[in-house]
Image (cartoon, rainbow, N blue to C red):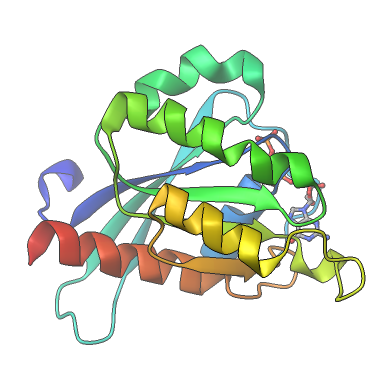
Length: 179
Ligand code: GTP
């Protein structure tokens, strides 16, 4: 049974609606951009086997895509149970999605406490130096507040850094729960 594997980790990807959670997962699993992903209703999960450099065991990630819309809040609560890693995601073009990650942190931690996590700013392809609205200092502060292991800027459209997000989180979970 997959759930009894000691190198099995449940991961939840959270953040406001439309930040690109489903698209990130599609890019990670299929290595391609799936435009106009359907709005997530409730939750879906996907399994991925991960090989990490210098770790001889193959890790199994069960990645849960949780609907970001507020009306799904009560559905989401049940799905945090057992999660060993969190991907906190915001949209680099929308400040409010960055600010709301503190509310996401409260929601997650009220159910499962602090778990290994990474912070992701997505839609890198839509911004440049002039249009950047979130400063490095702000991301450093949020990273600290979340106790995130790393901060990534991704493009789920182009595939930029997407693999790194999950590899890093997998490594952090392995180091935390199996060392
Ligand atoms: P919910 O299911 O409502 O929680 O949304 P979500 O966070 O899963 O967002 P989703 O993946 O559905 O993406 C929302 C929109 O943003 C879609 O139109 C995507 O095609 C687009 N999108 C996602 N990631 C990127 C990206 O990196 N770059 C660009 N240009 N568009 C993106």
